[in-house]
Length: 212
Image 1 (cartoon, one colour):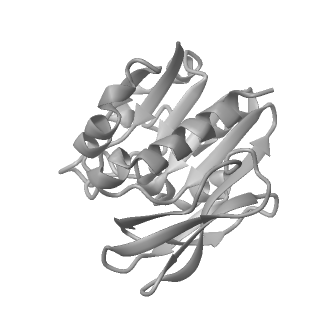
Image 2 (image 1 turned 30 degrees about the vertical axis):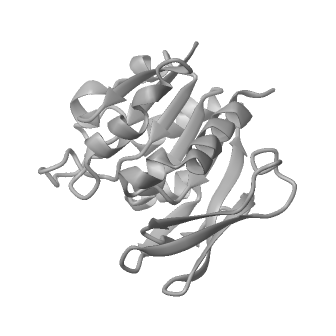
């Protein structure tokens, strides 16, 4: 069974949402959840997991908005996460995982800009990416993220559309060294994490990362 390290919990995105959203994945993946990434993660710990799912911004925990990434203190920051990927790891950066400092944004390939209040968002698969193959467009009620694309090599496979937020990139992949990155922007509320189409999207993203 594939081990997945799930990083979650910050001042605007309670870890409970992710834990409840993935609670019935225990028969498919061996999930380990970390809330306080500053005091728990080490490079040696990262090496134990073929997949990391980061759903956490640069914030210590829910209720403590001190930064996760602190020079001279944090043992695992953007530099160490990039080394993990380049050495063959798979990183999924989901929703709040894309709200971070500039170093992390340059690593994963985007910078968070803004979002309107929660609204109806249509997710549309485009292109011929393996993740989107056989997937149908679907609608959720969620925060509609707007991101600035930084990566020139991003392979975009998913777009999001809403009346309030227009058309935005919602999912893309990158190959970095021996490893892979997949970015997915939806995922704020529990109802989204319980949505079967969203869960299938996450599962296919992990499987894409593990292929080859």
